[in-house]
Image (cartoon, rainbow, N blue to C red):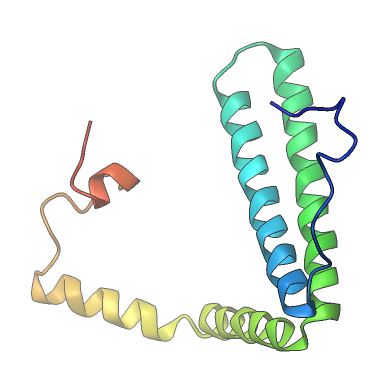
Length: 132
């Protein structure tokens, strides 16, 4: 538990280097996504409409934080920005063409390689072989 009465609890022994700052911002982005997941999981776990509304609103605010941290990361680390943009463009091209994925899926079906449980919903547990 935080010790708010200790005025030195939040101090750090030194300033971060630029590289450490970049990594810290990446960690902050990850933490914001984790918070979104947590709040949405809590919303999904209750039927209280007031709580559901507030939790959803807070989750959306965390996504704004993701955007703010990502914008800062792009300013601090142009290489990360370039690589993220490359990934976005790859997906855009893949989804615009649609031909390769459809062709390979059709080939698998024609060969009869689909498993018997292809229609079953996959979960993390089923992918790890730990179904509950």
